[in-house]
Structures are given as C-alpha cells and as structure tokens.
Length: 271
Image (tube, rainbow, N blue to C red; front, side):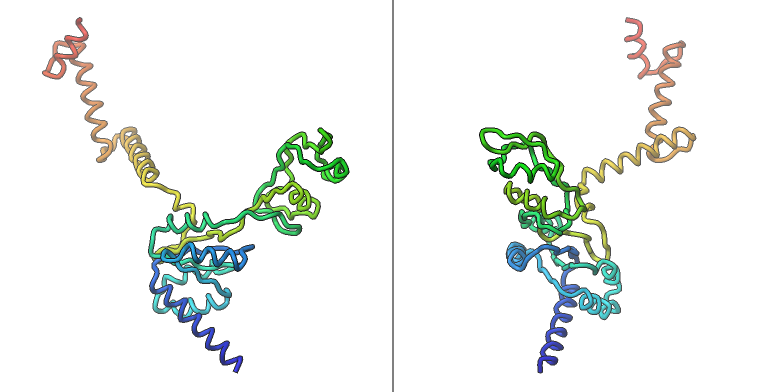
C-alpha cells in the first residue's frame, strides 16, 4: 500500500511539473542551500499571485523534463542546470519584479562552524563590551586589542574569513559573541529560462539605456571604419557630406569661389 501511495505521489509530481512547464513561459532556476522550511514558506507566501515555487529531487525533475521533451524540445536546455539543491520559480510576470521579491526574502544568519563562507567577513574596529578574561581568545585569532574602560577594544578592522573558506569554530564563536550575523540566506537565482532560452541572471540588469548606448557605440565604430577605408555606408554618408562641405568652405575662404553658405563665413572671417 505504501509503495502504491509513493507511485501516486510521483505521478502527481510529474503531472504538476509538466503542467507548470506548459503554462509558464519562464522560470528561475534557484539554489536553496541553507533555506529552512519556515523561510521557504514565507517566500512562497511573498510570491503568491506572482510566481509558483516547485522544489523536488533532481532525478524526478530530470525524468519529468525528459519525458516531455518530445512535446517541447526547448526544455532540453534546462537539463544541464538541474543539479545541486535547486528548485524552479515559475512566472508569467516581469522577471525583474519576481527577482526583487526573492531578494527581499533573504534573512541574516550567524556563521556556523564547518559552513563555507559565501562572502568575505570583516570584523570592524570596536569596543566589544567583553571583559578582559576573553583577551586570550582574541590573541589566538591574531586580533590586536587593548583594554579600554575595563572591556576589550578591537584596534583595527580584521578580515576574519575569506569567501569560499570553511568557517572555523573559533571564528564562529567570536562572531556570535559580537552578535554579528555576517551571512544572508535565501533562494539564490542561478539561471533564467525564458521561452526556450537559458541565460545568466545578470542579463536582467541590462537596461534599455545600456542597449541604446552599445548600439550607438557600434554605429560610431562602423562609421569610423567606413570613413577610414573610404567605403560609404548608411552611417558614414552623413559624416562624408559634412566633411565635404567643410572642404568646400575651406576652398571658398581661400579663393574667389563663393556660394550662399560660404558668404556668411567669409563675412565673419573678414570682420
């Protein structure tokens, strides 16, 4: 009976995932390391009406996607990214809006011994309010201190942990003593799937102004190249006309040759 229930649950999961893939044109592939059930529930509530979160085992996700590739070949591009502790956040709305909600639902967390630091951790110079009996603890971590008004004062900012390093027991204890929660945990957007295309989330930071600026930069480069090699193009012709007109004005100023536009320049030059 248990085996049958498990089979029914799997079938329901496959149906739900395929239904979401068919209904929603885009989704985030998100990492969920260090995200507890309580925090996940808050994220789901925050996204309600905007996006749908689906977690699950990678093997089940891949099996469901592979089984549906015949109907939607573009889904094959998702498969290389179904690895690690990940989930899918489906939406029909603006990706930037959904990303903002996800980012807003990250929470501060203390450093735990054995965890890998996602970022550098620096302890600022400060009076710690800790008694002199803790001095040896700071000395063991090579942190310069002095006793000020009966408490330990850290003299300089100290880079305690580097990104990617494993947090040691002493570092974790120190940060907890100082009430420093250096890390934030939440869903981490790893890739974006949009209508058959997978791309890095940083692409969402590109604005219309950025695109316009890059386009105009390309136009300017093409115009410069065309002028340099003497090959007229749509973007170089206006510059060629302007340059030719400047040459005509120069000739007119140096000779008796004149034309309407040159008269004003000649009058200015003679005054």
